[in-house]
Amino acid sequence: MNRLALLLVLALAGCDFDTRSFAGFDGPTDMAYLPPGDFFEVPVAFVTNFRSGRVGKLDLKRTNLVVENTAAPWIPGPDLAFGADRALSEIALVQGEDTLTIWVADDSRDDLLRLPYISGLDDSGKPVWNRPELGELRFFDAEGVQDDGTAPELRGLRLRPGRATSETWSLTWNGAGFVVRGSASGLQDGLAVAGSPYETDMGELAFTLSLNELELERGVSLEVDVLSGVESADAGGLVMDLRVSDDGLWVFAIVLPDEGDAWLAIWDAETFEEIDRVLFPVGASPERISAANDEGVFWIADSATVSDAGRIFRLDYVPGDLDTVALTPVAVPEPNIDVAEGQGERPRLFVAAAFSEFVHTLDSTTYEPVDVNPSTPAVDATRLSGLITGLESGAEPIQTSELDDDGTRLVEPGIVATTFTGEMYLLNADSGCMFWGTPGRAHLDETLTSLSNLFQDTGAESSPVATFDVASQRLVTTHPCGGVSRTEDWSIVFDGETQTYEVEGSRSGVQANRLHEGVRYSSDEGAISMTILPGNRPTTDGDSWNFRIDDGIAPVQLQELPGDPLVYTELYDDRSGPYYRLRKREVAVVAHAGNDVVLWIDLQGQGAGLRAYQ
Image: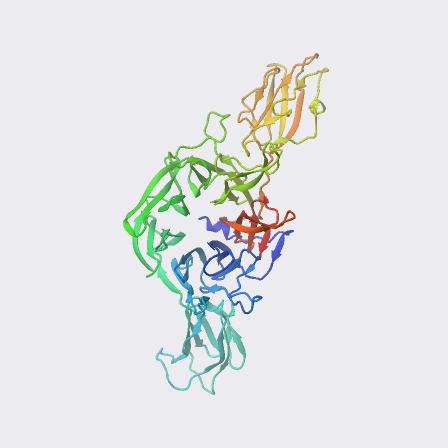
């Protein structure tokens, strides 16, 4: 995962979407999804924060933080705290019969952490929330020996749920006050001085120090433990991604060590022990794990270059049988950052390039690349607007803007792709083509019935004619695959010496194919096609047509540096007609580490009704 780019802090651009503000995010990085069910009636997203060491819980139905205490429905539950000095990245949820445990990676220490969030159900069947507790206060002399005599007091000592976590707080006397440090929260800015109320930097603890008229020697200290159930284990390197096995008994972790080759660690979800590891090939740089359509299968992206191309890994396993865990390399056109398997009628894999703008479509059975543009001799991929941050497959088909013959919006299986340029694209999971943003598809950006007023006659009077294509009902025909015909300006200039036209696109460049009058023309990639007929007066050198093509694609604007999208299916009340109807829709949730927001996007509405958690 390219986290360095994600951690750049950008100013939040002006927003015109629905915003819920609760100061809950400080570098939101990764998310895990919990569907409605045993614990909540609403879908919930658990969001790691890179700069605060906390996990936020989002009510995805009400655009609010999750409420845990039903007796006070207006008060959200506290965050899940792991320590302000930790840099949380990847997250996974392990759900038991009546328990829910949160697993997160700490990039600052290369640790793997877990916290019991729901420890069971009470007699009425409601969740028992795990809450932090304070331990006993201990006093030590300057030599570090515990002193059971009269000690300074921390009067009114209290902790704040949602900020306090499992750690030891130490207060060391420096002659003027106590220097405060938390083992998971780090050194605090202010001194705790006698008689003044004190609160740690992130509000984990609060108290008023009383010296009890003691004359303290420099170096004496106080200690108090906070117990919240957080467990920590050395992962052995940077954890690139986490994924729970289908049966919930294992947690897979991709680990990239400081030295040596990466490995896939397998952790026992109950005992919190690493029970096996599988080495990746030498030089591999695994990035993300994504679910396959078949049980017992995952896909793993690899950003390493292999033989001037790339590869992904197929992870196979039989639940509960470590001997069956196997990594199989699969050749792909480029080094990559993410993989998604489509839910369409055709078996398709989508592979996001790590260092280019391309999403490659593969047959998920043969692994052969699928050509999204048969107009060229090469096998073409889908080109986005910039480097790709993530891919995710929709579980249900998405209602698109494309219309059938009856004028009804078509419903197609989709793949969601986000880019570093701050855009989100929807790709057809059967074809690899982008969804059209308008029913008109790619089109001539002019309201014209002829190109005659775009013709520029530079020499002797000429009269060539651009013909109207009856089949396509257009003067300029564009490519049927969304994204091949791009938004750009085209210039078609006549060369008197060769009696042909040179064709140039502002993004596509000068075309190898030359346009001949009287012959149907197609640009090199099939982006445009047209026919120009000679007129009664011959065309002369420098005569030209100039026009603009609109690509017909309407990506959702997300602000810059969006993270890896999370996609889920939501049930909602459709109130567009005279009767309320319960329907399904696909929703994408995207975190922005730089802007400290999480966006909720209705994919069916092509981004309409965008909401922001901030």
